[in-house]
Length: 203
Image 1 (cartoon, one colour):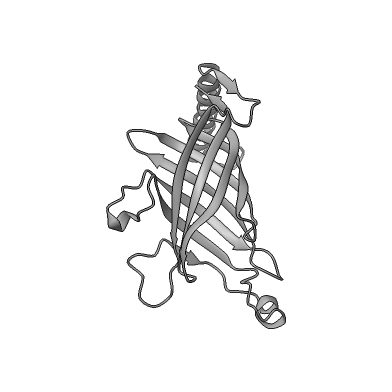
Image 2 (image 1 turned 90 degrees about the vertical axis):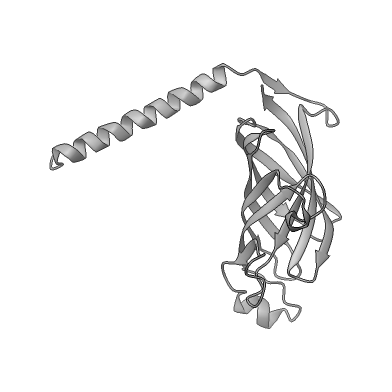
């Protein structure tokens, strides 16, 4: 730590203490909870069904309602070699409402969570995407996050994403989220039905 000013040394020391305290807090939280693990596919320790609403910004007239936007453009490879235009290489960032019913929040349905993350189109010959996002809860019913990763195999009627962790009410959870396309309007809106089954829970 030679060469650092006294204030810099103090700031560094504070950061180290905060980091160590956060580790201790996480360890304490883990010890105070009971771990439940289910080995039966039809007997998860927790489950829920939510609807995921994605309204893609069209670049023209839906600025007020859009909940997602392309962060990159399709690669030349996808727009010249494959004439069907698979959006290969396009990354979309989203902050999408999730509801218990099918209606959009604009129609009066209150969101119970928000899905925040991204999906990218990763197949050259046809539509296929890969998701990485968190379901962020902040309500009287639940607080915390559920984190999901995996391939969205769009040519299949249902497809599974891995639940790889969580925080708060879903501390260190594991499971599967089964997705199914429930509705769509062209390329600017789609709704996914998401059946979430958790097989590792801390209570």
